[in-house]
Length: 284
Image (cartoon, rainbow, N blue to C red; front, top):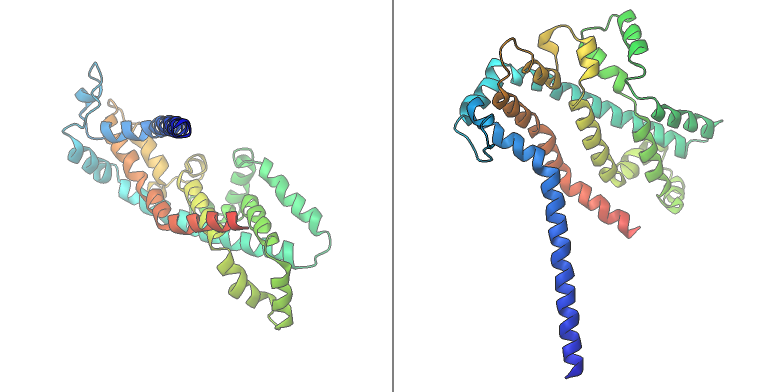
C-alpha cells in the first residue's frame, strides 16, 4: 500500500513537471511567433483598424485589397521573381564551390593545406558590410554594376559552408575511403557515388541557410542596383514605406507576409531531409 502511494505521488510529480515544460515551451513559441502573428493580423486591417485604440488583435476586412495592392501596385511579384532567381543561383553555386573546396581540403594531399584552410576561416570575421566599398569599386571596374552578375558572383563562395562540409567529411570512416581506393574508384566518382549521397542532410541545411541569407539581402542590392526592374524583394518592401503620402501599413504587412512564403516552402520541402540528418548525427 505504501509502495503504491509512493508510485502515485511520483507519477503526479512527473505529470506536473511535464505540464510545466509544455507551458514554458508554448510561451517560448508564442514569443517567437508574435511578430509574424501581428503582421498576419495587420495585413488584413484597414489603416483605421490598425491605428485604433485599444489595438484590435482580430482579422480585419481589407485582406483582399491589401494583398492585391501589394502584389500589383507595388510590383511585389517582379521583385520576388528577381530575388528567387538570385537566391537559387547563389545557393547552387555556393553549395557546389563549398563541396569541391571541402573535398580538396580533406581528400587531397595539398601543400600548406592547413594554412589555406585557416585563411578561409579568417574570412568568417569579415562581413560583407565591411568590404562593401572595395566590392563596389571592383564590381564597377568590371562593368557588372546594375546587373545580376553583381548580385550573384561575389556570393558564390562561403567559408561557413566549406567549414561545415569539411567537418562532415572528417566524420566519414576511413575504412570507406580505403575500400573505395581498393576498388579503383577515383576522386570524381567517389564524390558523386559516395560523398554526395552521404551529404544530403548537410547540403539541405546549407541550401536553406544560404537561400534565406540571399533572400533577405538589402544593403548590397540597394547600393549596386539602379534599374528598378532588377531590384530585389527586400528593397521593394522598403519602397512601400517611402511614398509621399502616409504609409499604408496594412499593405506593407501584406507584402511582408507574402515574402515569407518562399523560405517557408523551402523549409517544408527540406524538412524531412533535415530531420533525417539529425537522426544520423545522433547515431554517430
